[in-house]
Amino acid sequence: MLSLRFYIALCFLACGTAAQNDSSLPNIIFIIADDLGWNDVGFHGSNQIPTPNIDALAYRGVILNNYYVQPLCTPSRCALMTGKYPIHTGMQHYVILNQEPRGLPLSEKLIPQYLKNLGYATHAIGKWHLGFYKKEYTPEHRGFDSYIGHWTGVLDYYDHSGTEKELWGLDIHQGLDPLWDLHGKYLTEFYTEEAVKTISHHAKTNKIAEESGNSTKPLFLYLAQIAVHSGNPYNPLPAPDETVDKFSYIKNYKRRRYAAMLHWLDKSVGDVVEALAENKMLDNSIIVFTTDNGGAPAGLNDNFASNWPLRGAKFTLWEGGTRGAAAVWSPRLKKRGRVSNHLMHITDWLPTLLSAVNATDEIRTNIDGFDLWDTLSEDKPSNRSEVLLNIDAKDSVAALRVGEWKVIIGNSLNGSRNSWYSPIHSDYEDNNGLILTSKVSKAMDSIGYPLTEEQILSSRKEAIVICEPENLPDDIKESKILCDAHLKPCLFNIISDPCEKRNLAEIYPKKLEEMLHILDRYNSTALPPSNTHLDPNSHPRLWDYAWTNFGDKTPPSKKDTEKCNDDL
Image (cartoon, rainbow, N blue to C red; front, side, top):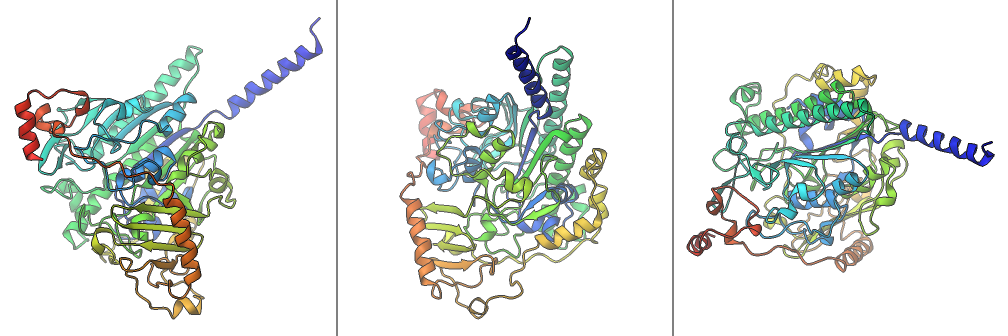
């Protein structure tokens, strides 16, 4: 006769198995846009460029209205992947240049490595920009099962060449291999097609495994789009002419071309969500959409984006460079269809996503990110009370947000992007029908997640930034002290003054002193920036005019290397 203890054990195992099946790990689809402006999405109130798919996702999920990123590509992606501030990985100054023999330190454990250990199939598509000089720094050696995309920061959307300091080389790779046969293919479209193929292939693989009695895997898809970053100097705003023509109502030609680029980004979101629905994966997915930094309305990397009404742009520590457009959707969010004003930073995604899949025990203890899953899901108070926006000793700039306060020191790019860049007024007819009939809406409707026009209007109103809210305190309303962060630290109350127009440093000297003390504390933990020399061995002419993992290779001849050194 079987013992009572044995029966209890059987029951426990059976109950445990059922619970495991009921709470199967969700698919995670992480979509990151490049240089998208705050004012370039409809859910922040812009009517000029339709973003119906992005908006349909955001309005059904949680709009992150108090969410920060880093001011540049490499630092933001580093913070995302590691859960650490760039000062703690040596990635705080500028971006990784194509010719630099460096990358995100191999000692760091990245999101795909965590998820792969949990049984996820992990795939990356698009921009990497975290180092490639040796194969160990490339995506397939850092936790991704497959990778297709570009390693560098800037390239052409059609010929797929990356240019830097007058050097030219192909930069689109599958694994380590350059892809020469894609010439002429619009890259935003290509990355979207690859994402859809990855989703379909994953679903088929799981179906075969299930039919064979084998275990299935959840999907982690990292889609890092090229859009809406500017292209190479000879074609800075690349988009199909027929797409540009759709935006003839936009009078400014550059803004019109930017709108066409953004159209393809929005279409990408629609196609990906549609593919998830068609493959029966949408109802068990977490979808994150975020920019990597603010838009670049002027100057270097100008893509004619708009961060209005926020101050500043990409490269800067003003709100326009660091406050990111972002949203998250999932059936696992218990309170959806709302705007969150809880403080959040891009480092928080690592612990937050691991918490969402019940894997908090896996998280390393020395990260800077916070687990905000309950905040996102249930609107519970955030554990995060402060955000280090950056400390860059090389450029003598720093910024910190603590509660409602923000301190900023120094001028990025010599103050050339300290302004407010007005939107280009030329709006399309505001039609919420575009959102309600978008691919995302159709896919969401098919699994029982509808959206109404009333919900759209309510969330949009709440998500719009008002530079001077009602009931502004008198001391702030009357303050007109301008900020020259190059001369003295500036202090702002971001809740009352989100557009950073009133420097309160002289009115609240004790608060300023407190903020500077916190900055000093962070600075005491900073690693030296890892920026290094340019390696002549990187020159694409040595490698059939393609950017490659040059640190693993011996140059063809000393003469060629010396010539490349002269070029550098």
